[in-house]
Image (cartoon, rainbow, N blue to C red):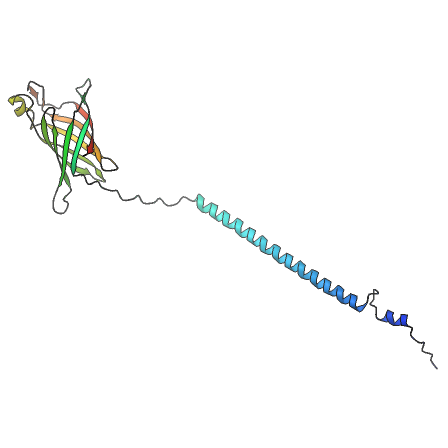
Length: 227
């Protein structure tokens, strides 16, 4: 008969151990540890991937933004010009350069009254200026129209000039026939303008009333302020 030895308690414990001598509970704990570590590693890898993607996106967006800023933007259309309402009364003073030497003389106090007129379709096309210089004294009528492309700059000339200065010959031969070419440049606040007198077409007369029908060298810069 085969003899079956009786298994001792030590042999029973050995059967319950794994290949490395670990018990079943220890093996289970080891498996749980491996699972936890693996999960942590996966989470870390995913987090790193997300951060890397965010960094790459930011770099690309910065590059695109830099390229966009380097590209010249289209030139904005200029704002429409505000046209001054020129009608009103103005007090003026300034200086004139006369004769060919030249000689600088004061223009003296001057008072201008501007009035718009024109056809029904454009009632502000022209400006009539009634001008008076008390110290001479003289009164003068000038007409202007806006320069195309700039509604605050005007060009015009004298159409009539009368005075009590001098004798009757002077009044008859000089004033009423003189023509002065002039430009007006209104300030940005529309409360005044600079008048440039660009020359006298003639005739030119002296204080005694002796006149010559020839252009006279005269150039004035007169500053006017709305009253």
